[in-house]
Image (cartoon, rainbow, N blue to C red):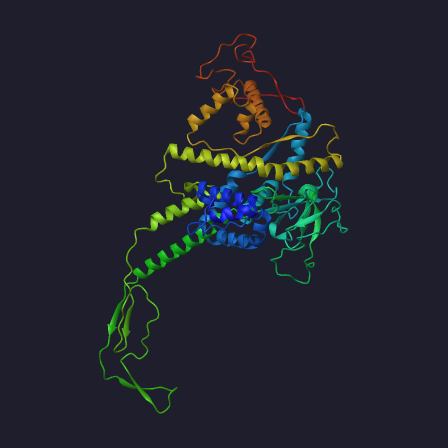
Length: 532
């Protein structure tokens, strides 16, 4: 202890000990020290919601401006959306009953294309747009809309996709149970999110119109209403415990991206100025002519041969005559060789800040090889799978599936059962970097039991049940027509050699070498086409 601590120790020993411990901790952790080097840190010790409260709107608007006017930011949105959602994260019913699973698949396929209440897109398109909004603006809202049972074969449910702007962030404080439907357990509201006991999400305060829309007399007044949690989906990536609103993924790179865009603009302007090779004619004739100036009555000025010669812009190949006594002097900008390194390092920082790889953002594959591409894709795949399984599937897919099933049961399209209607969600396939080696490795993984055959088929973005049905139908018709394919594992081994076939079809040929009659869906035999 120093002299001051010892003096304090006579009066308050505990305070003196606390000061000594804090000073000792600062010496251990350099990042906790104070001084000039640490002056740029913004250590406010605030909660996640306190940090978001003042930054929510400017971050969202600036991120949108960045996506509109910066090609690299727009590219990042496309990359993340295409890998997380692709053409859609699709369900595979898993109730344990094949008949019920097929019924569920048919109902879902019929409903999916009509899911959007605006009639613009299907559920998979809404998945992509909601994820894009989450990355760009920080969050998206999907609202369940129950529809009348006007079609006895379609589930009476549609979805409404809203931007996060619809959440009334000015609803902040103690609102409690003020008569709003579904707000019975509401204790307080934070940034437009209704919270109950243990800060459990109860619902959202939603505006009837977009706050940034130009209001007309036909629109309802902007008074937010409470919507219960079971009537909507609030999609965002939670970064800290207790966080109730989402933050744009572009937040760490906004300044870097803006400065890089300004730098590239300056480089382009410099190149344009350097390309303006122009010629100038100087008139040294001092005689001049008398020119009447209407703004100065009674006075006459003397000007050169070209009294209208004024230089306000430069153009390539321009020849300009100057007034007598005028001269042109140019700044001589030095050439820079730092454009490419600056662009490279900034793009790498931007890609890392959002979670992409440099080659994805820039399209630059000059220094790439198989090893570097594979290493980058492995990390990107881990991040994408984490986002799929921890954010998109639990918040969007499972919630929508549960609502779909409940409305199908209420409409009498599915039987009520004690067991839940489970589903497995199939994510987009990952294209192999080296197809031969990667597919061979996947086959070995399935053969050794590392992954199941269902997972192997699903890894290519396919429904394993449909693949089995289509494969069985294909070989059934091939057997009937007496056709043999070297891809038929029943007839050939892994090396493509024919397997031994006995009279009963053993050895891999279930037909016994004889074609079996093929029947259609109505049980009628299908005859082979007559040969010419």
